[in-house]
Image 1 (spheres, rainbow, N blue to C red):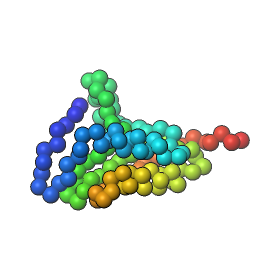
Image 2: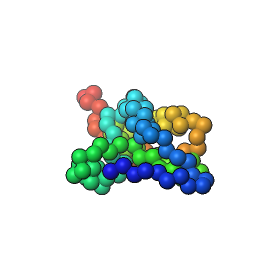
Image 3: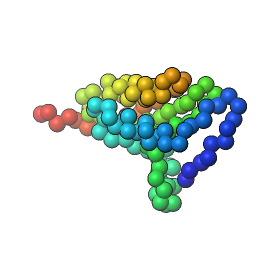
Length: 113
């Protein structure tokens, strides 16, 4: 289900394909094992409609963009990876003002033992 963004005064527009670009940037961060839909209900609805749902949610706000990423990481470095993901998103969108929310959905032991 794709929603067209209606331009609103004072709101940043979200360029087409930005969520996919951000997903690539997130998956490139060392320690990220997976991304998950930022809006799980949308995933279910899209599956019924057989549409692809981006895993990174990008929403315009009055002061820039709001980005949410849900990720899987190794249990021994979750917080560091989450910080690195937030940094990668900020760098990708610079100098655009952005609020970044990274949620760790799964933490799997790294298997070194």
